[in-house]
Amino acid sequence: LEMDSGLIHAGIIKSDEGTRLSLQKPDGSIVVVDKSKIEDRAVGKSGMPEDLVKKLNKSEIRDLVEFLSTLKNTAGPAAHGKK
Image (cartoon, rainbow, N blue to C red; front, side):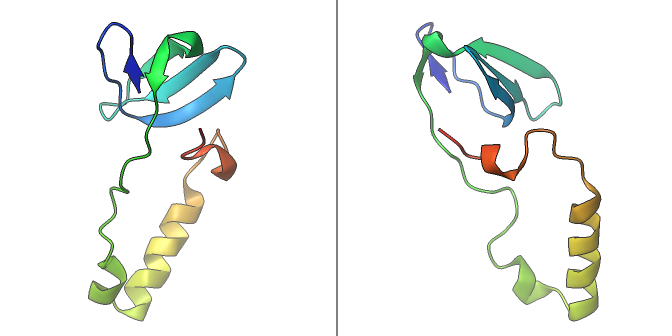
């Protein structure tokens, strides 16, 4: 997110409600931004390597999927990368 002050915030959208947007930054902190101050939004690349599956065996893939399914996503899958 780029704001009129020249600041750029990067993170995962945790909530997108009303006039405010909450982002979880890479360090785990939360920043709340007034949507009217946002000049531009862009979706970044995933942190997971594109060829990861090629480097894992079936058991490791199954373990990865099981682990990811245990993570709590409060924003819901539809909110990820939403403009």
